[in-house]
Image (cartoon, rainbow, N blue to C red; front, side, top):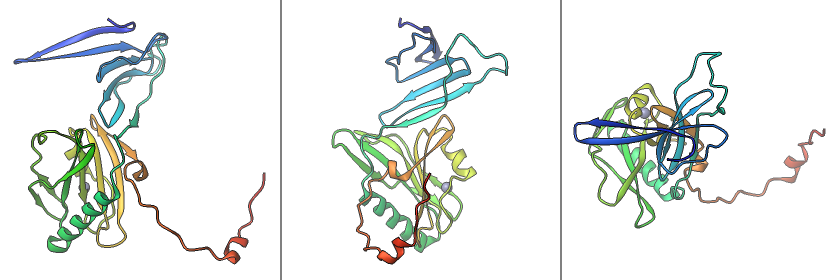
Length: 233
Ligand SMILES: [Zn+2]
């Protein structure tokens, strides 16, 4: 048993045995080896979830005001992204091209599943069988193909801007992972990136997800630059 480890709870459901550890966030707390555990802190109980792509702290409950556990340290909800590498810009373009073609044909949304091959050290895109409408989508996801770990989903919003709708929140509530929405697919595309863990959505900057090819900008006229005076102090 590790220092600060409170208890191991065992749940038996049919033939499935699951163990989960609870730790106290006290002075002696050190990150434990488990990928999933609970952490009791001054301001509540947090679930810590570590995958190959991210580590998240999500709050399970918070004590009433004045009932904080003052002998423990405070913890916060957070997401630390540690993708094996960024998604190549070619996959961004392949996905956008697919979403654009489906929108051109059916004026509908579409979805692509994103996997990671640990053997190849590469991402893999798979298009699942799906029923898609202008504001609806249902895809047959199924189990992970052999040798692949699912990273998340990418889906389009046609000519609407990229955001995470209430339907997306419902669809992704029990689907921990990276969830990316592409919007305005026929024009200048918009993109919204997030990681969902235990129904909690953490927004992530696209630059931390996608590798972008550097593009060369033209020289700026000196007369333009001279117009801008810095504010000092
Ligand atoms: Zn959506």
